[in-house]
Image 1 (cartoon, rainbow, N blue to C red):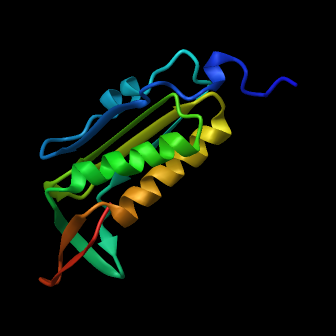
Image 2: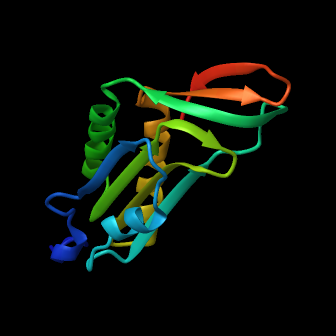
Length: 153
């Protein structure tokens, strides 16, 4: 009996992890989108996390991200897990560290798969797991002079 995944384009790519990075420079949507381009992908899902002007009822002026030295290795572990769970053709994730202003890009992730539903699910899994498991922290500075450290992504 034929499987619904008999066509080579339906199978996960040999090396779907195309870009993983933590950077102290501005992130590029174009770079991440280009990294996940694949002729066998019918759907690409992209998530962009930006610095918002509020959190928990307080006005945010700026924030800074910092990470543990193992952060990129943890990103790779999570990316490999997502690529194993879904028919990922290509995957990319970049996270910013350093000081950011309201509106700056903090994280960009993208996943391409043969079909849109798989791409949405894999992208959601990727960003959710990055947020919960990668040791990156956010230092928020509020308009009232207070500040706080929180887990990030």
